Length: 284
Ligand code: DGL
Image 1 (tube, rainbow, N blue to C red):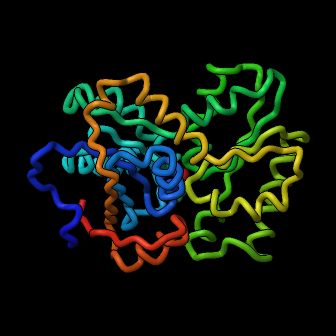
Image 2 (cartoon, rainbow, N blue to C red):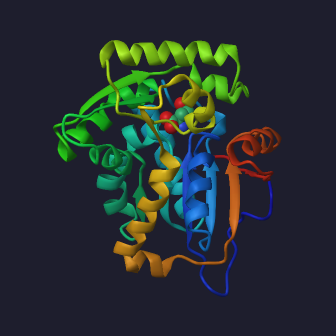
């Protein structure tokens, strides 16, 4: 275990922003958030020991996500961003409606689906948008439900892309093998929707594939990356919630935790983050 992340008694109370993901992928979202809001203190937790969440049951994802969010609360996070789409789709609502009012009335948890659906809703009525995601995210229908509330005139096509997370996790972020699957998912998208105005990469891992995806998908189709959506959305949330903003400490600190081995985390984290970081290991 590393000492850096341990709860300490502070002269001035530290209230951090927790970022949670099933593994490494949330680092793409964290990176964009930190670039936008560098002044705050962050604690990243990747549940690498139990990743991937993408094809797990609702019950398992809810249990794992709740455990990790409570752990981040215990480590003085006043606000937690669930960067994982699958966890946002399957656990966020229950956490917001049950866990927080019952046990943590002064803490807040935000997800990535609502801000991403809002970004899609800005396309004109009649637009066709698509998203690529894990099985859990697509089957939850969370995006379709949010978008139907925000912009019922927009047609959404959802494609399950089961090969993309394993490819990224094994470092295959370019090359023929990857292109084969990208083309396959794009043809599947077109078979359901012949014109696509925008494609949302609704999974933490996919931004790493952006250059490869951009090469395959015609320029007329805009590609939306979640980090660029969630950063401004968090900034906007803090502007609208000055009481939360005032509680957050601002020392520009960052710490990383993983539920699996720390060596593996450091190696892949540098791929996701573009710089080297070390993590502490926790048992949850
Ligand atoms: N973080 C997950 C997501 O954004 C992808 C990885 C996983 O399946 O756990 O949906």
